[in-house]
Length: 194
Image (cartoon, rainbow, N blue to C red; front, side, top):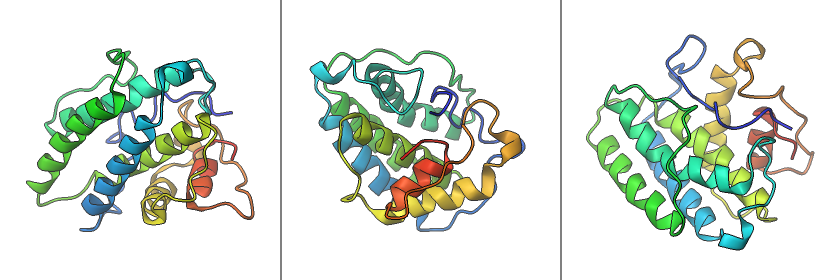
């Protein structure tokens, strides 16, 4: 199991993170990633919140809170603000998908005002991994998700995540199942056990 999810991409600008593998298509794929994550959050019900997740130190409640807050934190980073990814996000008791989608709309609006798409790839990678986490926590597969989002995430992670900088945020890469889809390969590379 990965050591946890709290520290994922806490500082993508630090040495070893944030290599520019971006292209103009990243914002479109980030939009798909945001839609898919919102859809996954819409499948979560109050009775699911105590379920285990692929993040060994989190129940589904903590994962949901982290994911819902992610677009706000991405936007803060885009504005040059410091973000403490280790701080507990606000607890939202209901309408996780609605709260997430409101913040996602603000994030996409900000991206559409940018000429430089550097950073959209790591946001898509983070969302793709956490969408896999959410779906797996709910006992669902990821076969119906956009494979291009996972491929973008995997491209970013392979360019930026090394054995030297996994530093507690990620477990060592795992073997992906031979019949696994791109999300399973992304999850395995990020240290999850598909």
